[in-house]
View (cartoon, rainbow, N blue to C red):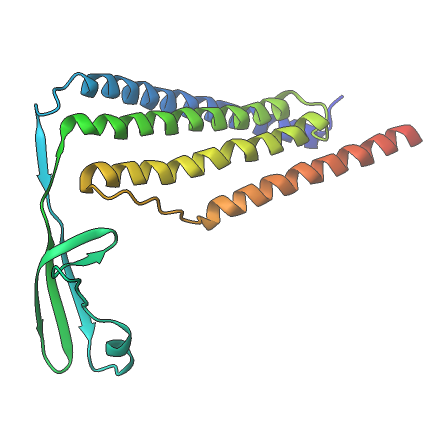
Length: 227
């Protein structure tokens, strides 16, 4: 006979299992769309559709603060260009007063082919594939809770660890995908490794839960042996 706490765990497991299955279907659809888009873009002639973009930047500096002018300036290289966030600006106009200085900058137009977007779609497909795998691991954990007699099992502890392992590639691929988008649309290859504290906390919590459940298994085993 299950006690009321186990029944609550079972109910939460059923809800979580249903939600994760829905999420898995949605991400799978996105995966298929990315794959189809990659194939279709691969069939587009290299010069069939070309897109030209440029970037504008407006930089305003408070000159009334004596510290800022000594730390920040609009320095240009030998060709009269300066770089901001990996993009080179070579058309700019600097205006200023005694209190403010403003630079209006424009980057050199960059042209890329619509065909090049297939790399973005391919990166998106890989990201979705990794996300589907991570959701599958989360769904497996809820599946255990849905049917368990007790949550304290080695299988549960291993599931928490498996979720952690599955989430790390998802975070890494998100950095790669952003870099691919920037490379295709601006010509700048720059992988920015951003430390997302939310992801870090989730990973730490998952690892802690794995160890907590392992400890719970040990205590339950000792209790059963005592009885």
